[in-house]
Every structure is written in C-alpha cells, then in structure tokens.
Image (cartoon, rainbow, N blue to C red; front, side, top):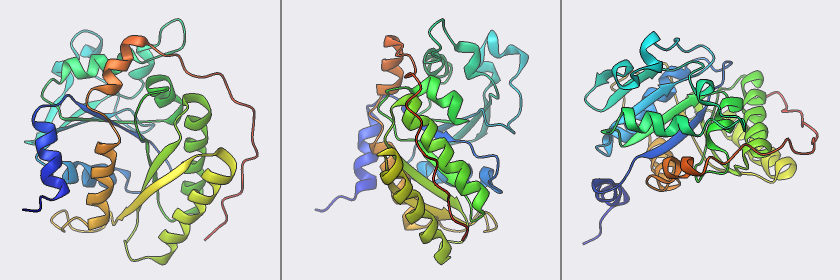
Length: 260
C-alpha cells in the first residue's frame, strides 16, 4: 500500500527529538501573525505540538520570571500550540564569544512536550543562535517592495554571518496573485546570483482568509519541507559545541529588489 509523506512524518516524530524551525521576522509584513498561525496549523495537521518562541521586533516582552523559570512563562494557546513571549530573550544567553546557542537548549528543556520549536526573531539574533546549524530559515514577505527588500536583507545577513545557504519563503497574500510568483523568482535570482544561496520553496497565505479555511497544498508542502530539513534534535545537540557566529563576510553589492 502506498503511504503518503504526511503519514511518514507522523511515524518519524513518534520517536524523535524536537525539530527547530527559525523564522526571520520582518517588521514590514502586514499579517505576520497570521503566517505563523498558518504554519502552526500545518504542523498540527501532522499531530505535532508547536512552541512559538516570539522574539520579533514587535513581539511582547518576556515575563520577569523568564530568567528564573522559563517553563512557567509558556502559555498554552490550544492543544497543539504553545506561546512564549521572548522579545530580546535570545540576547540574554550570549556568551563571551558572541554566541547565543545555549538559548535553544534552555527553550527545549522548558518545553519537553514540544515537537517543533518555532523561533521568530530578527536575522541578527537568529545568526547568534543558529550559526552553522542544520536548519532552514523561513523568510516572511508580502507584496510590498519594502517587505521584499527586508526579506532579502535577512537572507543576506544569515548567509554571511551564520553560514546558512538554503531558505524557504512564506508570503502574506492571496495564493493566486501572479505578483507572488514574480517576487519568489526575484528573491531566488538574487539569492543565487549575489549570495550563492538557494530559495528552495515558497507558499502564500491570505491573512484575510477565514481561520477555518483549508490550508493550501503549497503551505502543507512547505511545512513538511521545513521539518525534513531539520534533523531531530540536531540544532539543540549542536548547541553543546557552542559554535560562534562567523566573522563578517566581504561586503557584496545589495541588488535593488525591483518594484512590482
């Protein structure tokens, strides 16, 4: 009997460690919260529990207890989603070498029941947490040129500072908009031509759609690819080695992301 990929992932998670998915925050994206919710819904369809560690620029500040007992700061939003307000929290874990890799271990210890840890944070903070890890960052954008430029800037930072070369993209717009295809093609071309990086896949989610609307096949595919790109426990286990962020790379020209 043919077994679908989703069934295989469910079996894989039955006896695995936590997966870690970094999401590059983008303050210029309208509806970023809806994008994170959609991604959590895609993971929930696989019967996975997701902890959203929200450290974006506009995220809530962490509780005063975060430095003492991180587990008590985690809020249960639904049977499959938990939430940790964490703006600025990764930077509290920086060591003398500029690495905040120990933050992953602290979060994993605080949420042992989480199948997926989704860290939503600026590129500069993510670079200190995930340098040289086996992960695939997710970029966020919408159809506004400023948001696309911001997404490219995040990719450039992580490529040069953290050595991460493969990315996915989730856009806040209607899936049938042709401009979305042009944006993805632009980012793919700039990543390959200027950074030597790869935009592996992309999907759209309309933030104005009903919460009960079915997820698109593209979003489901993107969620599965993010999970498969993150070996179980690899990012957390690697934190023990405490790899430091890379030195700043030689500057490259920042291509103009054309208006659409």
